[in-house]
Length: 230
Image (cartoon, rainbow, N blue to C red):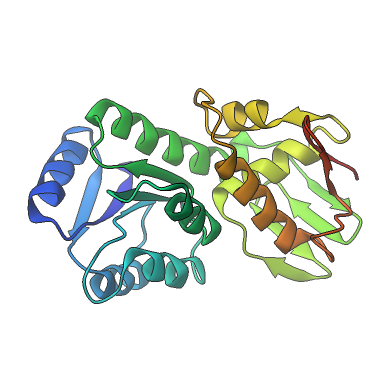
C-alpha cells in the first residue's frame, strides 16, 4: 500500500520539486501551501508522514506542529531554511521527529523520509512487536497497540518517544550512550548533535515521570548516557 505524505511548503518551486520527487519515489502526496490548509487537511485525511516548512503564511510551521501534535502521533519532519540550534530544539520540543535544513540533497531527504516511515510502521505493526503488555510502576505499556497509560490515563507519545521508551523497557538497567540511542532510533550515523537526544528524553520524561527533574524511570549517567530503571 502506498504511504501517504502531507507536504506543507509555501515556496511553489520547492513544493513542486519535492512533490514530484516523492511521487517518483512511490508515495501518495498531498501538497498544501499554508499552515491553515495543513491543519484542515490533516483533520480530514489520514497520513503516514508530514513534511512541514516553518516559515509560512497564515499559520507558521511551529504552530501547525503544535496543533497537529494535540491530535496525532504520526511522524513529522521539519524542512526549513532556519538551521540554528534554537530552531531545531524548538521544533523537536514541540514534537517534530526530525529536522532537515534547506538546501538539502534529495538523497539525504529520501533517506530521512523512508527512515521516519519505517520507524513509525515498525512500532505500530503488531507483527513486528514483542507481544504483550508491560506494567512498570504506574505505567502500562502496550507494545502491540502502540499505547502507554500512566495512572490509567493514556499518554500521547510520538513515534520517536515510543521507540525510545520501548528501547529502554526492553533493556531495563542497560546503559545507552547518546550515540547508541541515536543510531538505534534514528537509524543513522551520529554526528554529535546532542540537542536531538536531550530534547526527546526531556519530552518523554515530562510525559511518563511524576517529577521530570527527579526522574523515577529514566536515569541520567552524567558523561555516559541514560538507563531505564523499572
